[in-house]
Length: 190
Image 1 (cartoon, rainbow, N blue to C red):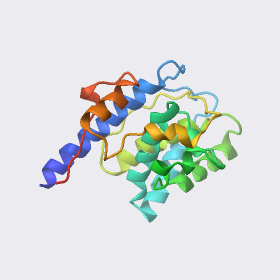
Image 2 (image 1 turned 135 degrees about the horizontal axis):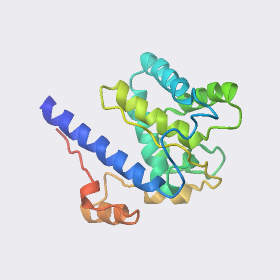
Image 3 (image 1 turned 90 degrees about the vertical axis):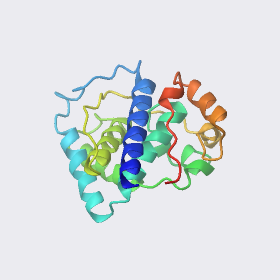
């Protein structure tokens, strides 16, 4: 039973990563984007995520979920982090999203070292990668250089995949982002 769960979790993570990579194409991202302007960004984010996960390991999946919810709306632009009434953060599908304090903490620490350089979108992407790695998943190079979104509307989160959607509805939602059935992974009850 546990072996099946691990395989399903692995394939889910791969599908989410494939989707995130697909959604950021065209933003001019590349591995090492901050190598001269903020070379410590990844180590700062990694140590922040590690510190928070040592206190509460349940934040790992929460950060990955936040990244998925962010990427599925406007692309990976951190629009889920924007505060205010009627923003993505306040949308019903996002009310259970947790881990904002981890991203806020990482952003504050990055800003102390490299003010005004690193986007929140990149901090969230690196944090999601590190959350997966700290949960004994694989580590990969994150292409950075994303721009932060300026628009965040609760109504735009209505298109997030839901566990109540039929397989055909899920395929349609994924297809809207240029993804196909191979990119869609459903993890059922085990």
